Image 1: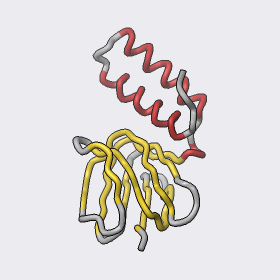
Image 2 (image 1 turned 45 degrees about the vertical axis):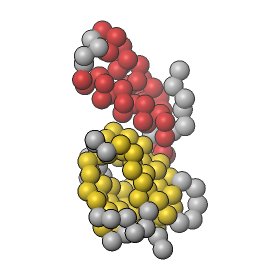
Image 3 (image 1 turned 30 degrees about the horizontal axis):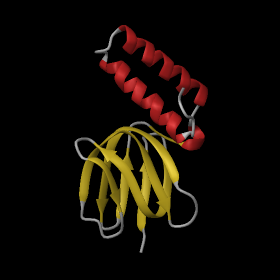
Image 4 (image 1 turned 60 degrees about the vertical axis):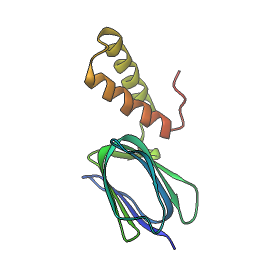
Length: 133
């Protein structure tokens, strides 16, 4: 048995298919993995890396910038305002965003927007396979 999974943003469906497992990070819940037979669940997503282990092939990674995850009857839906697959990451732009956020935090450690911008840039770089310096 497999999960029916879809990763969706307002612009498009990033991925839909069968998977053995989905892992994401929820607000106040930490990392959570979904397998077949999981009890119904709805949670708010952090800015995080989502891992989908398809029924066949290599793991797929998505940068998700908040949103929601729902599982019901072996159907997992990840809904996010902003979500990107590995192939959609602009590494140069993410690197520049990371540097700008780090500078903003150095100037003002309490800058909440810079904290979120840094996390978004780091998630993008992580799924792109780039190790930040």
